[in-house]
Image (cartoon, rainbow, N blue to C red; front, side):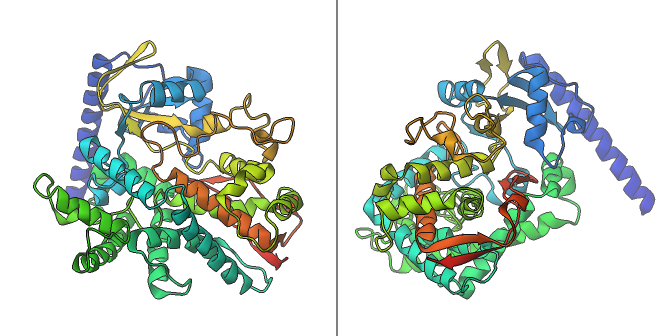
Length: 492
C-alpha cells in the first residue's frame, strides 16, 4: 500500500510538471507577457515570495521588473499591477477587459461561481445591478439605512458600557454591530449581542475568516486539485460554509411563506420578488438563492475586512490625538445628539482619521484577483485571456509621493494646509472600477458612525504606554489586520 501511494504521488507530480510546461508554453505563445522572474517547475516563483507578507514581496519585485510584471504563483500565470497609474489604467481605462474575477479555490469549492464577489459574466452583472438597486431603494446613503446604523451604534454603546471601564478585547463586541446591520437588511431582524444565533453565526464566520487568512489556505489555493483529496482543514471550512448557507436557506423559506411582493420588508423579499418576475427566464435552482446577500453571507454586504475595519478604527484611535477628535465631535455634534452623515463635512479631522485608518491597515492589500476576459493589449504587452491579474492596492495606498512617510500612521495625509479634508484618487481601500466593493457606501457609513458614536461616549485608554504598542498591520494571507490588543473604555 505504501509503495502504491509513493507511485501515485510521483505520477501526480509528473502530471503537474507536464501541465505546468504546457500552460507556460501556451501562454507565452499566445501573448507578449510583461517581464518577470524565471519560474521553476511546479512551484513557479514561490521562492521569491514571503508567504507571511506577500504584498511586501510583490513590491520588492516591482523595483526590479517595473510596475507591470509577470509572476508564476505555483502553476498559475499572474500579472501584477504596481502603483496608481498601472492599477487605474487596467481597472478604469480598460475596465471592461479586466472585468473577470480570478479564482480563490478555497472559496470557489463552496461558492461554485455564485454570489456577487466570485461570479462572472451575465450572472455577476445581474447580481451586482440588483444588489445596488436594492440597497439604493432601501436607503443606500439615505436616511432609512442611516437610521439602522445609528440605532445599532446606540446598542453598541450600551453593550460597551457593560464593560464598566475594565480591560477587555473589543474585537467581538464591535464585530457584532456591522453583522447586525446586515442581518437587519437581509432578514429585517437584529440580534441581542448574547443571542445564540448571533454567536453561532459569528463563530462560523470568524473561524472561516481566520482560515482563509492563514498561510495554509495560500498553499491550498496553489494546488487545490491535489490537496482537496487529502484530509485537512479545507473539509471543516466547507462544512462551516454549508452551515451558514443552511441558516440562510431557512430564512428564505420563512420569507417565502409570508412574502408580499408589493411590500418587501428586506433584501430577501426583494430577491424573491425579482425571482417571481423572471421565473420564465431564470434557472430557479435552490443554490441560486442560497445566499441572497450583496456579498455572499450575512456577516456584511462587503467582506469580513470591512467588519474588521470597524475594530481597527477603535484600536488606532489609541495612537492618534484622540483629544482632538473628542474636541471636534463635542464642538460640532455635542454629547447628546446622535452623529449623522450630515456631520461628516463639519468633522475634517475625524474624517481624516477614518481615512488614514483604512489606508494604513489596507485590509485587502493584494486585492481580490481579477482576470482578463479576452486577449488584452495593455501598454506594450499582450496578456492572454484568463490570465490572473493582481492589482496591488497596497502599492497605491502606500505611495510615498502621495502619502509622505507612508509607514507612519498620520491623519495629516488627508488634511490640506488649512486643516480641511483632502480628497485623493489614491485612496482606494475598496478597489476601483466596475469590480469595486458594491457595499462601499454602507461600509463607509458604518465606519464613520460607529467610530464617532464610540468616541462621543468614551475615552479610549490603553493598558500600556501607547509608544510601546505595536501598530504595524499583520499580513498572513489575503487580509491585513491590526495586532490583537486590550483596552479600557472610560465613559465620558
